[in-house]
Length: 326
Image (tube, rainbow, N blue to C red; front, side, top):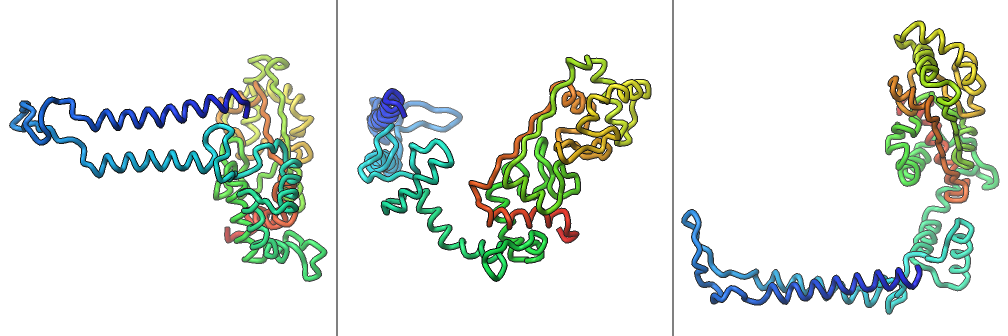
């Protein structure tokens, strides 16, 4: 954090605390000119007003909260770059990349100075590291178990589900059924293929799908025609003339989606003949996709989770669409 922003945050924080203290002092004074508990001379609907200030315990609670905040800011970070008297930090604030994070944690281990984040990782690895190894590797401890074999282990599925909820649910949902722009992982509509090893590759390396916008090439009428043809591929009722014209123009899309519109896992191009729509299946949604294109990014998790955890998560994801019990 730059010196300017550090000072700015410090001034605002301290100013807020001073303002709160001043407000409490002001509110604690009797400015009514009437003794405490006496009649204020006002009446409404038979109810008379008396000069009854806030209860003392209420005021004391506010003061205690203010004092707690001051003590906290002295002991812990909160005033710009000031780290607090105790020097505590949740993580290394100088880290800017995954490689720097790993180097920082390694140095912290070597120098016996773990910050909170590194300490939590260390504790988690100590507690659960052996569990991940036991589930991911065979008895020899040198070869990874096949993902389909791990999927048959109920304990591994439970562990994989927890890992999925912690790391993947933000996009795909806690039930893995996805949302607009994020694939449903419980059906058979796979963009890059639903084989066990393919799923693992997707999680390990990530995916980046780019569909260009075609309005400049097709024109607005062309977009309408192609949308009609695309919708007709999945059995929707459309304008026959538009669909016929769109079929001729679909040639620009066939390079990825195939001449039959069934898609191509090599490109992550979806099957257009089913009724699964990643970005919405209404005419408006389909026309928007053709007009502006779409860009979908799935981050790579190899450096974040490691292969052992990904082996278990892959088994869980594969199991979602290959086990009728789910």
